[in-house]
Amino acid sequence: MSNPGGAKISADQLKARYIGTGHSDMSKYEFITNQHRDTLASHVSHYDQLSFYAVAQNESIGRVKSQLLEKMVQPCGPPPKKSKEQQLMEKLGD
Image 1 (cartoon, rainbow, N blue to C red):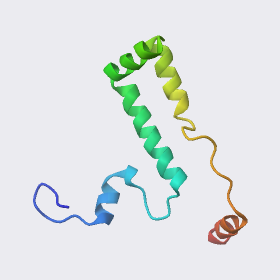
Image 2 (image 1 turned 135 degrees about the horizontal axis):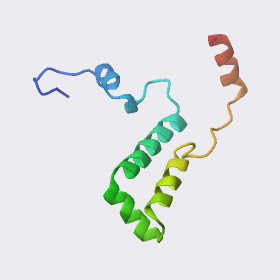
Image 3 (image 1 turned 45 degrees about the vertical axis):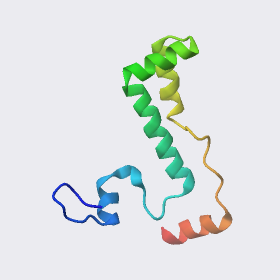
Image 4 (image 1 turned 120 degrees about the vertical axis):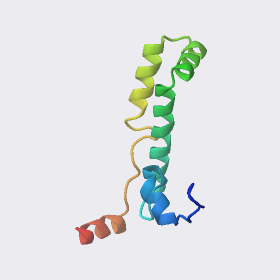
C-alpha cells in the first residue's frame, strides 16, 4: 500500500491511522462488534438510507433511528464468557 505521496505505508501505520482496523490482541467478538457499530452509525447518519428502512418496515423515521441507536449498545449480543485461562492471564497482566 502507499499514500498519495507514493511512500509505502506499513500495516502498523495503517492500523494507527484507522481505529476500526483493530490490533493483534482484539478478539473476534470485539472486531465484529466494532464492524456492526460502524454499519449502524452509517445507517443512522445517512438520511436517505434511514428513510428507506423506515418505508420498508412501515415505521416512522424517528422510531427506526431510535431502534438502530439502541442496537448499537450490544449489536452482537452479550460478550462471550471467558475461560478460566483467560481470566488468569488478565489477573497476571494487571
